[in-house]
Length: 127
Image 1: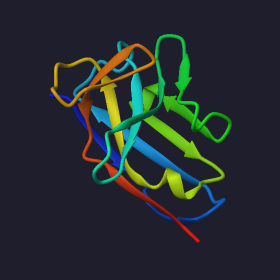
Image 2 (image 1 turned 30 degrees about the vertical axis):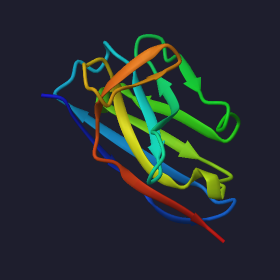
Image 3 (image 1 turned 180 degrees about the vertical axis):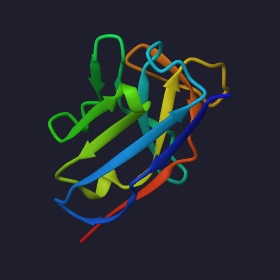
Image 4 (image 1 turned 60 degrees about the vertical axis):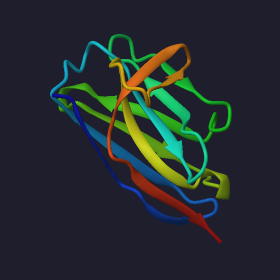
């Protein structure tokens, strides 16, 4: 059974930094890609970034390019999201996701379908 657990969320001031972690269990980590999505109440879940284990290829949404960096430690089955220069619009619940699955709540990012989800970790950017 796939399980994804996010940690590292909290409150940060505008311009600050934060790093999120996602520990994966019950997966063949080197097969499929790991992604990060975010969502605010009443809005659709939007893709942030993904990284693939086979060749470390990455994909970023235009809204975070140059500010966010996704990385992974394959031997620990863990993915990270380093967030720099945070802005108000970056606030939301951040979800770790894994490529594959058939969830009705799945989302597509960069042509890849992510259907496995963690429970999320909140990020609040304030003045």
